[in-house]
Image (cartoon, rainbow, N blue to C red; front, side, top):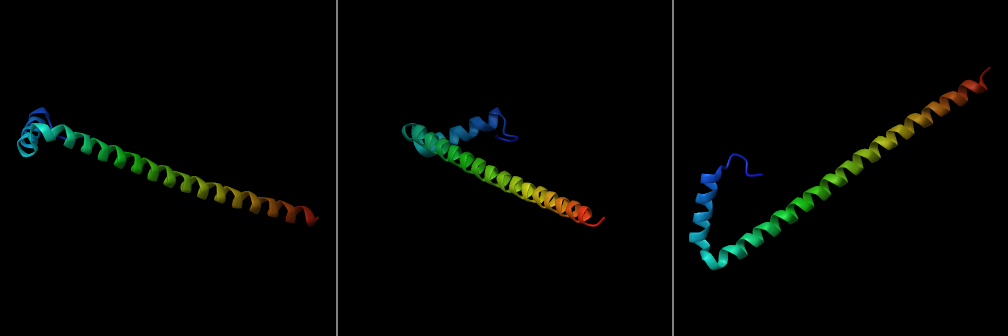
Length: 81
């Protein structure tokens, strides 16, 4: 999630955040960031699910067309002796 950020870098970021926001505001800022990340993750999961549903729908449509075409070819083959 953090990529290449190590523990020392994380401590520096937290120290800077503490200086900027102060000890009273820091927990509130952390909660806000956590909520935003959860919302972003939930939204991206929903978008992924919709895309996968659309892909499956297209695959089923293609399979249906293939089956209908095969049925038509078989019916035409039976009519001609």
